[in-house]
Structures are given as C-alpha cells and as structure tokens.
Length: 239
Image (cartoon, rainbow, N blue to C red):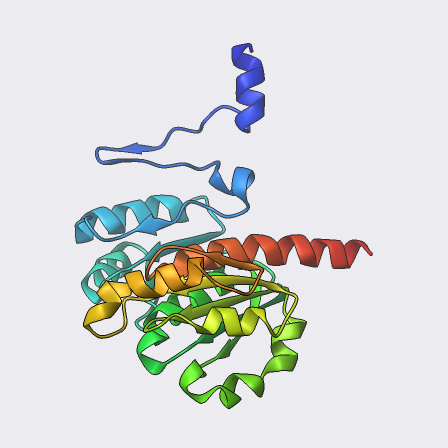
C-alpha cells in the first residue's frame, strides 16, 4: 500500500495539533462519528483546560468525562461557554449542537447506580441521540420495569445500568427485541467485588441480545448505543 493509499484509508493526512502532553486527533469525528473525548483523571486542571480549549476551536461538540468541579473551573477560565453536569461528571462545549435522532433508553437499577446512568445519558445526548431515562427499576421490585415495556420496545437501543447481582439487563433483554447494552457498576456489598459479580452475571446472561461493557463504563455503553441508534435512525430516514 502506498503512502497516499494509506492516508486515504484513514481519512486523509492528520492535522497535527500537539501540546507538550497531548497530540489531538481532529479526524476522530470523520472516522467514528464523534470528536475525540477527553478522559480527565490523571490530568492536571490546566491540562484538561488546554485540551478542551484547543478542541473547541475546531470541533462541533467537545466532551470531557470524569471531570471534577475544579477541572471545570479551570476550563471555564479559557472556555466561558463550557457547561458541567455534576451528576454525570461531564464537561461539555457545544458550539454546533448535533441534531438528536432516534431514541435510546437508559435504565438504572437503583438510585446508587444513578451517577453511571447519568454519564451514559449525558454522553448520549451530546453525541446526538434522543434520550429517555427510566430510574430505580431493579429486580427487587420487578413490577417497576414491567411498567415501561412500551418504551423498551420503542427505542433503537437500551442501556441498562446495574450493580449488586447485575440481573436487570437479562430481564430487559427478555422484554424487547432491541439491542441491550449492559453496564455493570461497582455498587454492592463485599461479595460483589467492586462490580465483578455484576460483570460476570451480565456476561453469563441467559437472555440473548445483551452486550456488556466495562465496570462503571457509562460512557462506553453510550458509545455503543449511539452507533446502533444512528444506524437505525439513518435506515428509518432512508425508508
């Protein structure tokens, strides 16, 4: 393969934008449908602020996950129009908001799972998805999720967030033919092993159609559901 062919394959020559501690990927949206997302842990407040400011110069939407209030304050000093969702711990800058298409439902088992569900819901919204949330419908009161079956069957994808025994995604997958993205959380007592029990339960689901992401990976679940939803929405518009 020639250099020209390789560049064409990956989307053209990289537009380098290097900071001393980061090389920004301005072609991410062209390749994957959404711009590079900043993961804030491990970065200083000033590093997060510089990266967000540099991305905001060219990107339609900028998202920074697992951000602290202090990191947001640093971002606001250079990007005054930045917003912060404290529940989701997401900093965002929407210079050209994406149209919200299709529908993704985010389901959380318990109130303790809400921060991870919030991360999924806010990320989905910023990525251009219409989002509905169903909260506190864990399997200890199975009748609660049964009251939302119509929503589960209308969405293009369902993100299910649960800790403890991690049983809710299998229940939801048995109620709908839509793709179910399971997000295990670290919520639970000792033998939950920080979410490992929920992760293994979801991977071992009896119900078909359940895909599983990492523990506390609300953002990861949102990425998978967003791609499914955008393909479905495009197919719907085409038909």
